[in-house]
Image 1 (cartoon, rainbow, N blue to C red):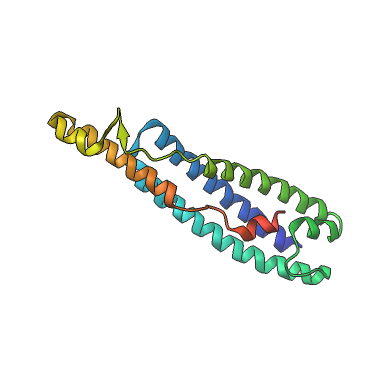
Image 2: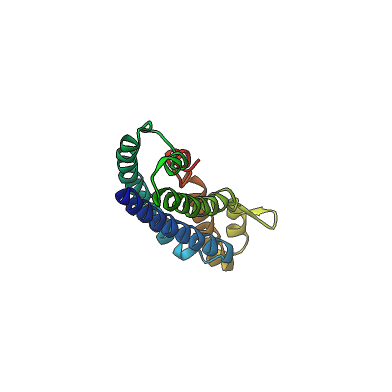
Length: 168
């Protein structure tokens, strides 16, 4: 049971890191500081990869714990907590509550993505560039912003469905 708890702590840490990275990206998008978006996107991708690795390790340890408890390998953390001996049941419930909170915040950020815009003031970017050469830098900034927003929108879900099922 201790090993499963240790893996859950690790997964919580990675979820917290992912939340931080998503919040950073959101702040960059909302403030128009698009030059750092590619780096933010790479950091999010790295955090998602770390979360996937943590999920695999946790799933293996959870399967071992469910076997000891006589539960199906696909048992949720709530089911494991309800069957685990004292004090592990309460510890697992605490892990579940902490992880659910982080997951809910990540989902809120993921669903609240900003929409991509290719128009400013009713003109598309190509028209703006042709209209006035002095706007070139502004057009570049808008294009970087568009690309950064597009990368965020096209990344897909940050959370694996298996984690959501485990925390159900």
